[in-house]
Length: 386
Image (cartoon, rainbow, N blue to C red; front, side, top):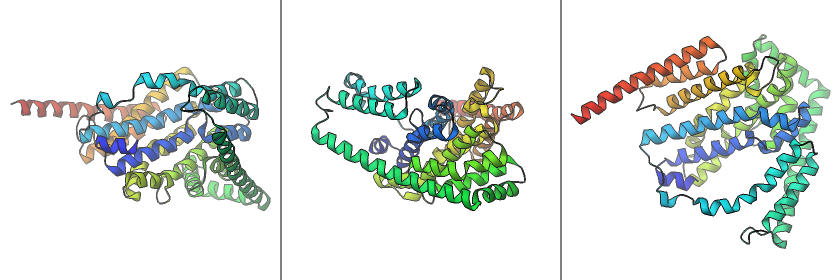
């Protein structure tokens, strides 16, 4: 996708950043969530099916933020889409839709109450079966052996990571470091949740640098989640998802942004410029966890969750992401001045903060700048036509 984006006209560092931010988002996207969802089910006591449902809305907003950022960047640069003849043909893609069967079977079996091990075995058998249908995807004996080898290697790396995470967890518990960590964070925050969340975020980003997804979550759940659960009385699922998000975004957060470095190598772009672009595109990942930490309705948790509360927070958060993406990219209807960019970012944050007053204030800012830009755009068109 990076060469295609560069061919379309995106700068190399932006193309690499889009890939880094999007691929990192795959770790928070249901139904798999980089395999962390299965472990989260064990550690929180929630059913796997409950976790993937509660993770849908935050993941949607994350990718919406990236989509809007890419869209506004394209408008700012005046880019056009690929010619129709270069687009993938549906006629070639649809006949291979059967390749999704193993994933569908995996999710269906887990949701229906089967054990994760049994579901994984059946999904693996289904993967082998569907590979026999088409000669281009057929599982040969060599491919089968290679698949077993790769699976074994992956299991070893995850097993080692889980073992080390277990040692860290026991050391923290036995030495009393966990209690001290909670005490220090609570003491520094002086009982203010926003400060405790910020300090926990820093811990997660530092601890999550360069760590694979599954091991990343285990470390975060063992070391950082108890700070919020025991120290600040946060809901167990909200706390676990909060630390998971910030452990994951370590992959695109400078200075150790491994995903961005990989993207920059393919795009032949400066690594740090790519990392900063990726962070800007994935700004939603730095904001959304704070939303569901303060308002659990976003992850459908709490006694006061209603259709209206979920709908209202979805609408306000969507408009907030649009406002922030527009401000960061410097484009709404046409190029934005720096004052308008700051106002849009501030307005977007207001709409994301839970509360009717803040939502209305943020929407007023977005609406005012939209109207002003519309008027300016009409004047420019009129002047050009004359």
